[in-house]
Length: 243
Image (cartoon, rainbow, N blue to C red; front, side, top):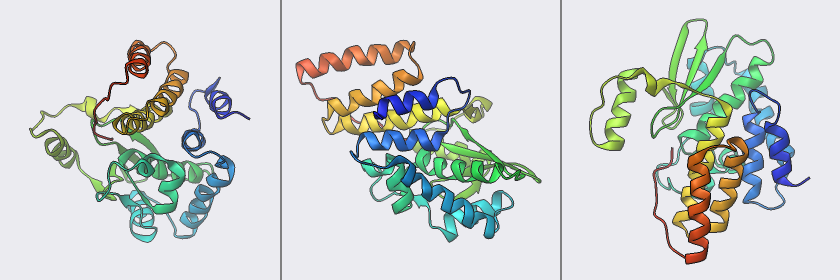
């Protein structure tokens, strides 16, 4: 089946699309011949190992994925396309905040299907995607890029390091990100990389997927208009920070 049709089927008539499946379909857009279902087997394997580890709370989740399995941020080659392709992140165990968050979320959702007490959700933190984890001790914040639990104060330090200034505490920074928003941010990163490399047709593909998620988003429709003009005029856009 056509990848676009697979993606549309995965997000239609569901409140929360399966993020792992959708992210793997997106990865296949840039890797012809990628077997989505076969690649998703890596998540099943991680979940099986997590049960045996055992992962029982936020701390053991971090220890399993960051220490035992070695998933960590790719500081040496942050803007590499591979950091935004889910199958390659699962293989290399290197990525950017949002794709590493996807690993954590996917594993926890597999565990939760076994009536596991652990739950997790994405946090739409500016410039640096985070994960929130709830266990029998309460709620915790997790930085998947560094592979550690963090406090809110430490999160504000992340913003200061990214933007060069302190920010006043604001609970809006910690709002949950649903599946659609997470996928939109992954696509935003892929779009930025491809624009920076001058691959406008690949950037347009990212927009196509974003518009499937948010068909009435004025900003995306405007980007589509601008990118079509770019394709005509052969301009070169710039680079933006990956999240």
